[in-house]
Image (tube, each protein chain N blue to C red):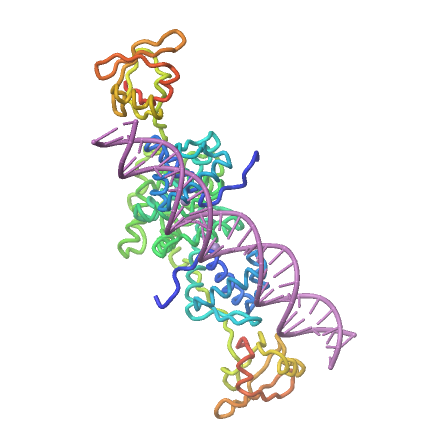
Length: 252
Length: 252
DNA sequence: TCTCCTTGTTAGAAGCGTCTAACTTTATAG
DNA sequence: CTATAAAGTTAGACGCTTCTAACAAGGAGA
Ligand SMILES: [Mn+2]
Ligand SMILES: [Mn+2]
Ligand SMILES: [Mn+2]
Ligand SMILES: [Mn+2]
């Protein structure tokens, strides 16, 4: 509405890969996008510019890519379509992982909102329905494998009825990655990524502030500036501005 | 193997439309292809050249298009994928005709041989299995419609077992269109299409040999030349060469 | 601080599929 | 047989996606 027609299949795929990279690797770099999609780096540059123009990613040359709020929504939608198709292919058609993945990623671009929801409902139904359950789909697979003409309907009513509470809706549980600046005194966290560049990056790396290191927040000054932390036995004072670029994962 | 990599989605769609036009209208003309695919005539010309280069159609400028043996096979394959997907969408997901058609035609290009067969087996299974039959899928539709949490499993074993012989595999029954030259004396047929051009076409049209007219073969001379027919009350003698270009549908 | 390797960008090209505009061929109706 | 309409083709263009080749930036180690 504000801008930008629907995405092309190609751009959807770029966005999807960026989404996964951020989830998996904590950052999306052009090289990785290129590798995933098996295209050359220069093609990625073009695509990134297109996605940025549509306000789906934050992109400036030489720096890594993040998703805008809009981009996040669109990416989640694409992934949903992808996953839904893939689940149908693997659990119902018993297609192997690789082909399911492959076909899903080609077809996802043509799966409407409505059909996605219907397909999800269908997959749910297969899992939930107490009469046919997983068992039913297994019968189908046997029917495919052997030449058995139809199913051997004897054990029917005595099927598990308590499969209802086992319905495995994937809950996505977002990777909890925060900026150090957002922590409260007393909290413990593991450093995941330092997004600083140049001089300051080198300085804090030298002081032991590296990915994987565990820190504890000691004190936070009134307006959040500075933040005192304990790391590798030392005490360290970091300015708020700088602590925003240190990404951590909270530890209980 | 002999030539030509896999077709692009676009070319598959052109081929598919040509196939349907020949079945439905007895000939495929560029204009109709353009209308079906909602593209301009000039785009069709380009596509036809591409398909001809791949030896899937017989094409020469200004004349109508036919499928080669190869093209027929490929087209049938495309249609099979299309129909399979569409059937899944309509009968299982209960998607409306138009959207099913639309999505099927976009996704068909990414459905492998293997997956098509699996999907066909799945649709068969749903129809055949004596335990769940059509009823099962109807339950699914009710489950979608109302908020009913699962199905009401009471009438189970006593389901129709004789649905096996009602399995509705579409048998395709090819439209029987023959050349007049292939008929035996005594046979009756309706004229479907006259593929002659120019002078001769005008002449026989004037004599009442027009699409829709019904004729009876009276005599066929020793080597098939000439063929005597009765049409609109008149008798007519047509040379064998010329009767090859008069397409008819046999009437019992 | 300097050097070199990796990562990223730019420029220019190509293939595909489509379009518009102008032209040619074929069919049809007097 | 001729005039006109319809169908088909050609030429030139554009957008999208990708590529290759050459160049630029950034970072890690000497
Ligand atoms: Mn995809
Ligand atoms: Mn995908
Ligand atoms: Mn299609
Ligand atoms: Mn189709």
